[in-house]
Image (tube, rainbow over all chains, first blue to last red; front, top):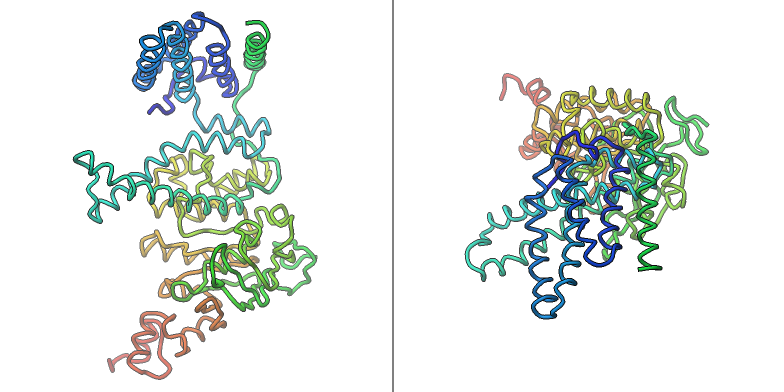
Length: 235
Length: 287
């Protein structure tokens, strides 16, 4: 799974919300532009990967996107005799996967949180983004701990299919329960650390947001809105 | 009115307790029995209070109640009177009034990470920044807390990659950095090695300056000498409350005394010593 990769590409350097707006524009374009034209946005997403010099994105994105191409072409092409529909849908999903991963690789979560705080976004918005970005590593470490604990108690999680299916319940139940228990304690911790106290949170290291960055951000968002509007009313 | 030099409280007079519980019972959501029942306790600033007892005694629950988190955050059923810094625990605006003024450290440091900080320094700054302090104040508070807990060298580390002991110190610094008027610590040294635990306990008297400091712990051997007062809980009720030295020597509470105290109590020695030094002093040359 791709996480932040240090670099000096444009999305690395720009304000995180500007990077987010570019991602939103490309993803919106892939959905809004009609017909086979939308496949061009796969190219745009690939260009973003190259410009940001984060080739590791390919390693994660391609295996994620390929099954969609396979099943969508199977369903719409071979079975439905509508190859074009299959390509359009697969291109949309591929673009989404690529731009999301480029964003993850280019914007450090800390900078994104700071950007939201500096813009005086409500606490839950900043927390939602930060928690989402940290959810995968957090669940992965919890799952590893549960797996180790259950193995120590004699669970055989490897081997044949029957073993693996049989291990699902003793692995997933403690994982879900511990995540829920952790949520209770996290709520208490956030409450006692002033997260819901109502004061405006002070940004510690607000990212620079020059005029050029703001122009790109608002232009991207405006273009995304225009694309959606055009799609709904004209195309 | 100002009660103590560091605390401005809501309608309290000088000498009033900063935290007061009168006839308090609390039952968790879905529980049949209350976790604490009939609890009458008052806490003043400037003293270290140890709360101890066996499993299920209600020590952790007592801290959660004293933090003003029930029923507002945790739900459940609360009866009796709970006042924190002069505010009723049922006050709908309690969360706003008490933001940063009551610090609670849980025994599971990994669940207390904010999830919004990617270095130890930022994790500690999370509380003060939520309170709207300016960056200079935040920086000073963070540096001071890191120095007190001896974790300055961890400042730029990722908090999710620390050991349990390191993380527990970071979370302690996170709570202390807000300079709360009420500091509630639930097994603050459970992840620490004996030496680090001892060093952390040594900090408590200085931290108690002006503020309420309550520690729930069963690590009596290491903590007893810094606790001015000890409250013994059992079955959710207060069994004993008094100066630590008296409580530890009271045969009624021999299960909640030091290892040395338990040994001498088991040997049916009347008026038993509770520390190795005291035991040597008393029985030196005859053991």
